[in-house]
Length: 199
Length: 139
Ligand SMILES: Nc1nc2c(ncn2[C@@H]2O[C@H](COP(=O)(O)OP(=O)(O)OP(=O)(O)O)[C@@H](O)[C@H]2O)c(=O)[nH]1
Ligand SMILES: [Mg+2]
Image 1 (cartoon, chains in turn green, cyan):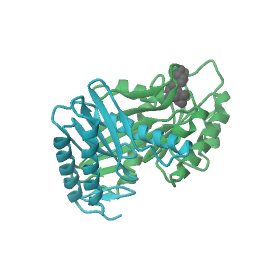
Image 2 (spheres, rainbow over the protein chains, first blue to last red):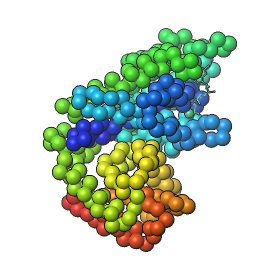
Image 3 (cartoon, rainbow over the protein chains, first blue to last red):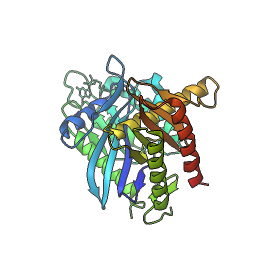
Image 4 (cartoon, each protein chain N blue to C red):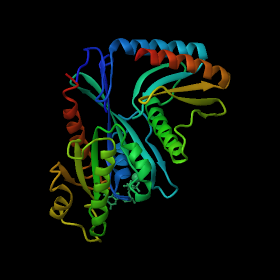
């Protein structure tokens, strides 16, 4: 539910990073925050536990400049990935315009990725939204890991993207690899979905 | 979806340009009469619809709006869990700044930030006034 102010020519759109616990959602936002420090005027807001796990959400407002004559503000959010936080996770999805699903590439996390994606589909459904219609980008994160077995990309595609058929990136939120391309992709998909409003 | 050239458009609801002017006026008057520091109308997703302040307010409003909508949603969910339809008063008191939340309707919240010289009693009177005026816009 992007908010488009035709009077002040401003758009506020909500993009949510979703995925299993410890998958790297918060690390994605931290990288974006450090990379675009000079363009982001406010601090990143994180509601987290003492152990640095996301408890409610991270929030980062990001001014991306003018698109089609509108001043576009993208509000980046992460959800808590831990299974037990489903109630708060669902609240963060309220009014979402675009999503990044951050999957963990470790072989040991395969099942968690699939369950989390299924959980996303169910939670979107509570807002009468379809995972097949909402702008969505997949990120296969932690490709930098060397000492643990990683899932082949084809396997991850098969597990998560065989029906969705959305853009996907191999990435590393820790090194920053493909973090910005992931963000750019979801912004352009989200803006494209708003085109009919921004005439 | 239909909308005016100078209106505001949502996927779920629409506000005309004229209505934004009315909202700005109501908030402006509300801030002046209640002596609050700042008032904003936000939606349940954390977007800022309209905002007015006394000119001396330097808070990060986008973050405040995101947190306020989330806080409201969390408290609302807690109310449901204990079998209440809602908790009517939401108010956080600080040493020098306090925050007051009121539900306008199912889509919007009015968030007020005020200083220690404003009493909660006066504020609640003025909030009630503002809510009546805001709701009248959609009648
Ligand atoms: N090697 C490696 N580690 C990563 C990467 N991304 C995140 N991590 C690490 O994984 C751990 C969890 O990362 P977070 O970003 O907190 O994960 P999250 O998805 O926000 O987790 P929740 O908040 O619990 O849902 C941290 O120790 C990160 O440093 C990556 O790309 N490579
Ligand atoms: Mg996190």
